Amino acid sequence: MTDTLIYHNPQCGTSRNVLALIRHAGIEPQIVEYLKTPPDRATLLTLLAALHMSPRQLLRRKGTPFEALGLDDTTLHDDALLDAMLAHPILIERPIVVSPKGTRLCRPSETVLELLPAGPLAPFSKEDGEVVIDAQSQRAR
Image (cartoon, rainbow, N blue to C red; front, side, top):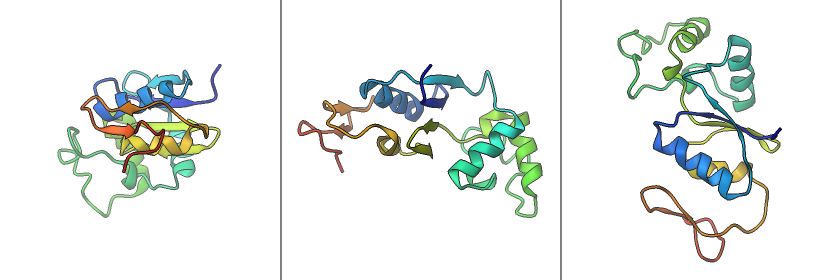
């Protein structure tokens, strides 16, 4: 059993890049396809606490029913936002990675490097060719 977990959407390029970076570091994470197996309320609250985020900060707007559900209403309380996220998991921003080094919303995908073990990594580029780790094992800027 691995000690790294990713809440993953295989249809999301950022999520695929994060998973590839984790594997590039020699880690095979536990993968939770959160659209198929959404977190329950307690898990979502635990993730939010670990992320130091409010439900509103973790809401995904693009490609979701965010507007149709009126979630841009700033008077909605956290419980209402949580209810919406639980009913429509696509509203949960992704990917979220949990590791021994912490929990992060890995957007941009390079954020996951903060959660990986220290040490040199071989060069790595994203799906679109953008260099993340250069030939000198340095994070590209």
